[in-house]
Length: 210
Image (cartoon, rainbow, N blue to C red; front, side):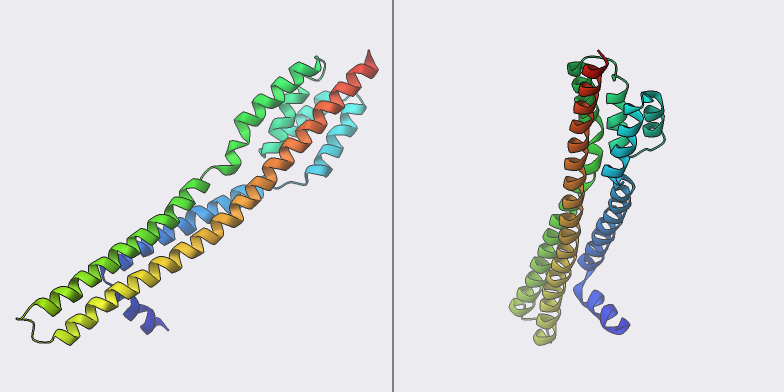
């Protein structure tokens, strides 16, 4: 297997190593983003239930401290709303909206880079294909080449290997990008849902307290 991989990389030429570097970069960013999203993937319903219980017991300060104890996006958004718990609904909505605009983009950071890397991998593979075809046609058209068949085979190997590796790299990165984007969108939607519940909770509680 190792011999096959070594031969595959060697026959593909220098573009193979460029594709490998691009692929490893994409994988690194994807794994970093995976763990970043995992840190934000808290149990939203359970967390809101804790916040709701504290709010209904008039322990808003404890609810704020509970949110401050986490660096995830959801607690950060809820914390902004809780700080306005004694104000009118419109001020709570403004605080939560501002927090959403500030914190939720963190969920989608780096995703565009992953998509870009997948496209770059494909294009570099295409460049390697063109280079291999140029070498093949040059060998066929050069009367001084003693072994045209071997030169043609080498050129075709470079073209096919870079094409294959570029596509393999791009497919893997695109699959990871889709998985991560789906996860980020779900987290974003959940944050907005719970933020809306907090606004309603504080609004209802304020009306009861009046």
